Length: 69
Image 1 (tube, rainbow, N blue to C red):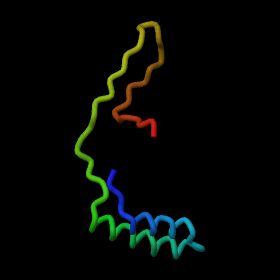
Image 2 (cartoon, one colour):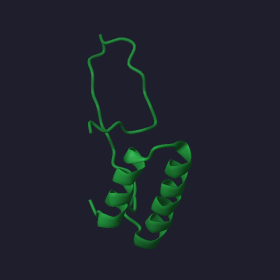
Image 3 (cartoon, rainbow, N blue to C red):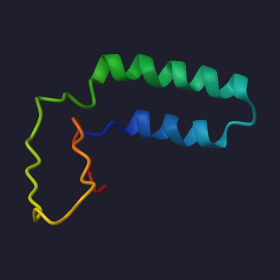
Image 4 (cartoon, rainbow, N blue to C red):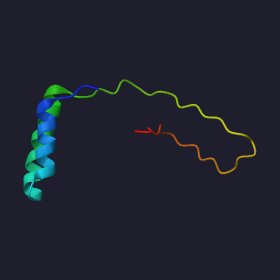
């Protein structure tokens, strides 16, 4: 996954911010940087096939893929 050292540094500053006003200012900088470097571009969806026995009850079908990370 692509990373930006500047965005990572800003993220650390956000965690260390002393108040909400500082956090808002830092997150604005992070968003501005994200538009410049485009750290992630989703290219589509991957199917998440699953199978279960007929005897298993209560399986909920969801339209989103859950990631183990």
